[in-house]
Length: 378
Image (cartoon, rainbow, N blue to C red; front, top):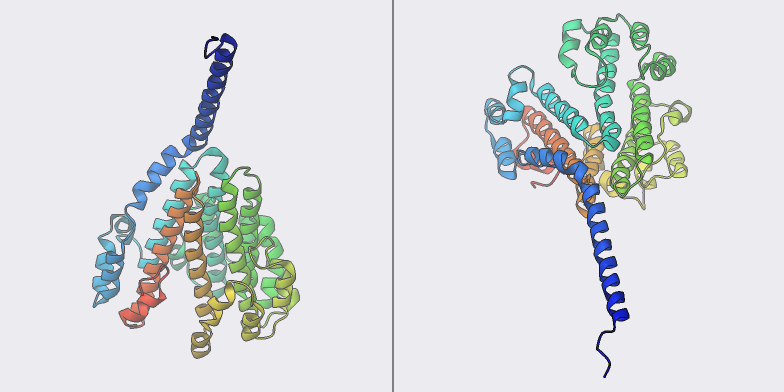
């Protein structure tokens, strides 16, 4: 009777087992190499994530009877205390957020570093816009310094020279040699003609998000889906805010079409063109039928009509963006997921603290404030 396993058959089995083991090792190595670059940054991020405010802390701040108690509760949080000791409430919050962006840019893996460094340019843009508007309004140097967030890619000496500039032309001269020079040179004529801040803001926003899209397109792995969802949703929100503001400011189609950003998530170029032709805010909302944004805006139209403030609709869009962002990252866990999820939650926390402060200053009751917050708490 022949042996159950012939030498040839045994050899084949051993070779097959060896090949299977090799495949398992290669898959494990590939997965490890994919996650290894994120081990350190994700550990740092998780440590900070554990310090985010929980629901009880937020509720305590909302329920505080006096403004002094509200400040004290926030001041007890170590991440904010070091800035609240030096700066007004909202600037202190922005300083802490900027510091967070700077940390993420420093610790992120090399191939994602440029993407997260663009977050730092957001503070350059905010500072440049604030300086230009302040100069146009005749605000003094010391007051301008109080509004500046000294984080970003611009060096301190450039920021100081911008603050000391007399007018927008001098600001442009100071920015020579920086990435923002051509941008501001192309923006000055229309801004000076219209004297409407929207043209200035839209120009800088377009530059910022165009760079983000370009960076995402250079990243070739599964994390692109997460990053692209982040950027493309933000682009839709920015475009809608530009269009809504243009109706309020009475701008024509030709004044703003160059500032519309391509690459949005739900709003195609033809849809944006139609929206730009709308005459009223209500028309814009009706034309958004079939998108996620129609209910977001429609639900807030009564408040807009009551107050006449477009900020009501802008805030609703921003809240939607943040809440959607959190859901996207949970559904698409990846190596970069924890970092992006943390940034989303951090921005939500800071925006909520700002909302609470402003609402309390206006004397709104806790029940109403809870409804205004991103992330529930209703």
